[in-house]
Length: 254
Image: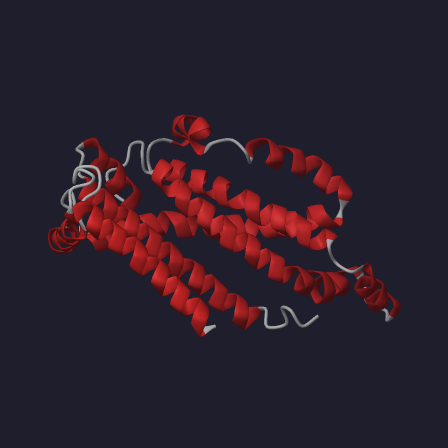
């Protein structure tokens, strides 16, 4: 384990070293790849003065509000629908084709429609993130149900368990590990879609900050936004893994 951590740290040392040397010797123009010093200075400036009159904390708060609301509604709708679709073929026949149709579509392909339907406020952005997060959770739930060992269900039924007890005491616990995998994937997909959601008719958010900076070739601000999104994405995934260890403690033991 220590060796793996050393390799991870070594990889990032090499990346930052190559970044520093590339900018130090002017191999690539700073307008394309700013130096670590320029990025650090831009971060401090944004941290102190904000960007476009809005503090960095406010930008993060607005983006996370959109992400969390969308993820919450994706979880409370995709998990039950995915489990039911995996459990009952007739429900899957109705729902699955619709999910599979929109799932591969690029977000920007239908984002303009969402704006026409729901306006330019947060509702259209949250809906876009919801759709991005919904499909991975739904698919993970179906996959989890279809992989359940039928012996578990038959054993529970032979002991007198009804359908409700089988679902809550056998099906749901068996599906939880894969549901969490789908949840982690969904939040990651939604986070990557955040930039697209904040591209149109937005004046705040980390994704918007990156897009706005690109219009004026502020590559240092773009790097700040990208690094912040990367770090916060790692923290979110780490939080989900922590919850998984606490809530799905039987993972790998059955």
